[in-house]
Length: 110
Image (tube, rainbow, N blue to C red; front, top):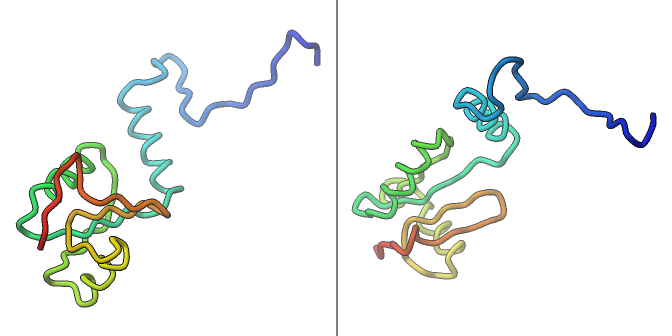
């Protein structure tokens, strides 16, 4: 192969005759990424506005997640306290190795 030729692999999201980033492509790409990535876990409390906001945002993006209500799930408070170094606050979002406490500056103590 000469230096002027490039070897390209077919894209998983290449559809002949369609724009490269239309909504169908984004949906398919998001689904493919979701299957390959770790499950998102959200520790929530029923009276937490930040919890509702993070779940609404993920729902709009089509991202799947597991919700753990700390008021009804046995052992959830203990898990949350380990993740937050003892802080009693929600939401706590766990995405693989990454732990986020609060959402866009909003956190609720319980």
